[in-house]
Image 1 (cartoon, one colour):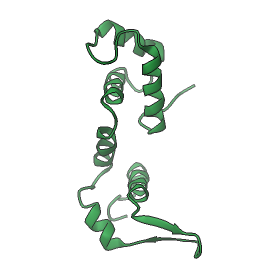
Image 2 (image 1 turned 135 degrees about the horizontal axis):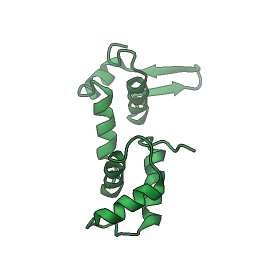
Image 3 (image 1 turned 180 degrees about the vertical axis):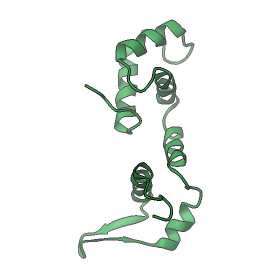
Image 4 (image 1 turned 90 degrees about the vertical axis):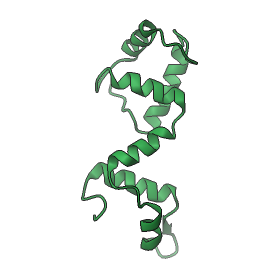
Length: 122
């Protein structure tokens, strides 16, 4: 609570970071979680808010995924694939993702969804 101040997003991201960095572990024999507070404090000293954790995850994504996410963010909190394709094509993005490369963009959206940067709304 000292680090997350009860912020649910920050708590979720912080716990995920601890698990991913192997700073917490579930002991199956004792049926309990185990951790070393001093090690956690030393290895997460720069993590003070949820934005830092999100940015850390964001910059671990490939350049392709980041490009699609940046463009998607300009479309608002809810957009269709069709709208994204239209904007992508009209912008004439001069990059490794060519105009009309819908299959690759769909794969990127799936990767972004898997990493919880976007959420599919049906």
